[in-house]
Amino acid sequence: EIVLTQSPVTLSLSPGERATLSCRASQSVATYLAWYQQKPGQAPRLLIYDASTRAPGIPARFSGSGSGTDFTLTISSLEPEDFAVYYCQQRSSWPPLTFGGGTKVDIK
Amino acid sequence: QVLLVESGGGVVRPGSSLRLSCAASGFTFRSFSIHWVRQAPGQGLEWVAIISKDGVNKYFADSVKGRFTISRDNSKNTVHLQMDSLRPDDTAVYYCAREHDHGDYFGFWGQGTLVSVSS
Image (cartoon, rainbow over all chains, first blue to last red; front, top):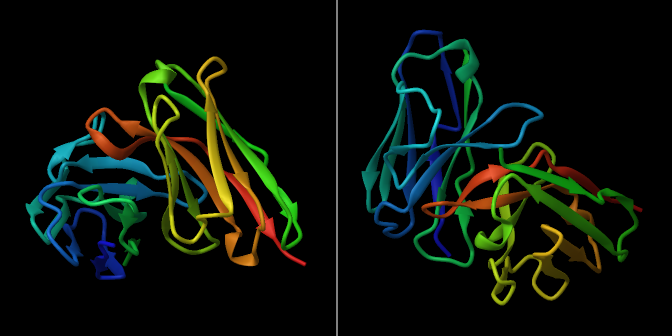
């Protein structure tokens, strides 16, 4: 099973700041990695797939990068609606499909 | 637009069974695999199961293997998750999710249904 480790667990930032979230895989997943955003009481929403491709309707301030075992989700300038929990997920080797433990981006 | 609606959740005793349903609309149902993903209270996301578009291939997380089964009815655009021998650690919100156009990511999600297993 591929284990995904996200860091930091919590990221405290102010609106307008840049957010950098990390996801590390226990073995290479090539670029078969996605990022999701989840707000309280809501289902997750797909932001990025194949490491760097934005899903339809996702603002350009969200970008993904990386390959192999190290990945980054960057939010270039935080908007108030971006404060949420973010998860990475791999589809390189499954079952099982696996998620990281999540990074909470909260307001400083 | 794509819509997934889960139902069937509730409060049950350990050892009981429950059947969740996922009703889909807004896309060609028979062309996509469907997943179940769960989230325990205050916890992260855990993939549970997948059924292929034709219903032939089914895979499960080790945590539910042998206790959960999955089925689909392409004539009714519905997927079912049969959960037997439920345990307290099965307590979670269960989401159904449609596979993405570009592979086994979760492109669309339902709103979730809560399953609570408690004595």
